[in-house]
Length: 142
View 1: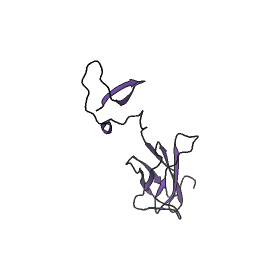
View 2: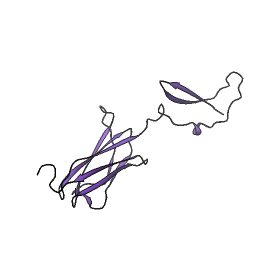
View 3: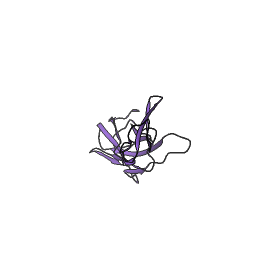
View 4: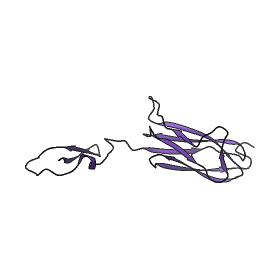
């Protein structure tokens, strides 16, 4: 049997499961597996996607910045009319360098024609972000 205690430190709730009797209060039946995960035990995974300006039929870059997403894969989902550049894979492993607080994943993609396209990056745990680019007929440099 375990007693679930919640502490508030600097505005964050930290859940701690400890077997104990406190001041005559009966011990609660809370299995350790029911203890909530919080920022103190597992940082929140976040992702942000950025898309470069583009011209039709020319490769452009898509970048996903991932925080606390190690040991997951990130998959870039493309809309109709957009394809991956040669030798590019849709899914990449997230690996955060030791000196940074985030990982950067990059893809090269090609839009067939001018228009607005929304691309989405999704992590294995379901965390996702979208970004829209306007593919201009002449690009940003005519």
